[in-house]
Image 1 (tube, rainbow, N blue to C red):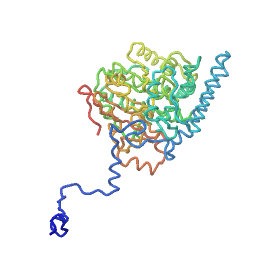
Image 2: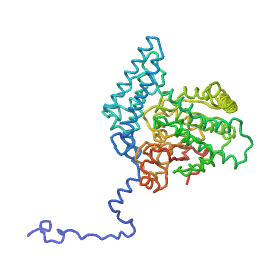
Image 3: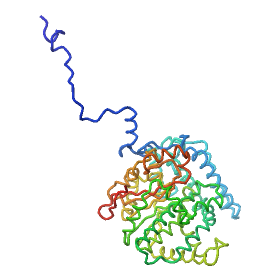
Length: 501
């Protein structure tokens, strides 16, 4: 007789009846397209983020739809060609054989770099020239970019790497270690900014006094916009502009500012004003972008912050080496203030205009000499790391910034580094997009002043970017639109500010 275990007709051998569950209280099932859309809204977890794997997909040079492709394939070789021409101009003006031969060697290295870029060769380690950033560069290359080339590495890293390689062309020389191939361009652009320079000098040469709170807020709103749109003068992007084009971009009249505020797509300006105007004798840090007219606008703004009693000190963070064509170096900082006080850069200016410029320049000299203003250049700012890695790769710098009441990051490159320069949804909250700088314990308040000149956009209302994609396909690189975005950080009780709505 068959046992129950071997009897297929026995009730115990039959499949159990299905249990019917009531799922009425659970969320409804999602359709596949809804699931894909939802996944797109969230970044990778922090443990999976690294320089070759950003929180959202990276922009890379081989992405033909992106500005990365045009930059790596056209703009960077053009910039290198102009840099080589600059060196030849210098070569034609020197007579010592040793210096000529040494500079020619620099040119040959630049030409080799240009070939590497045009032929899309692999990224090699940085040659040790004794600079403080070499270890950071080579650690990052070895860990994340071994075997990568200019086009398949993330655009942000590949572009920064090119400028560090350009520095290497001179840093290993005997006579030309501090040579800046972009210095002539930066000086020339400021020299052609006379209308906007004197517009501001004539208004701010005399210290502002005894303003009402209402007037102070209006002053702040206008100066912040001037500081924002001064970023329009970016030499790496505006390679062949006419003098009229530059003046149009740099117009600082009140009517112009009122018209351009509507182009600030992500606008925390008024929340920023309320917070800054609540400070008394605080500290604000500017992470600088462009030299020349933009730096001049930054200093006008910082001057007013001191005069208004908002700050007792302002710290400016620049670059140790020539960087992304027009970024501020110590040489640019010194040149600007000294040319204002001693120079004759504007031969057609009136005596009154020159007096106002010199008066303002002398006041800025005193700020610098007394320590009210200080210029700093940490090596982290010229590495390939984004600012998501600032707490881990430059803990000394992060600790230093924790002492600030507000860190203002100027310009497109700093914004790209804040947001990891990746395909984040355009309505991603700014505090989320900047990762640890928005959430790490001790992170100070962060504000980004950025005219939009590349693909990454965050912090704007849903639907705005999509509409512009349809109506103005080139809006992300035109410089017509901007953002002023504020993150409260995680500074503790000292500097807590409301999260912008």
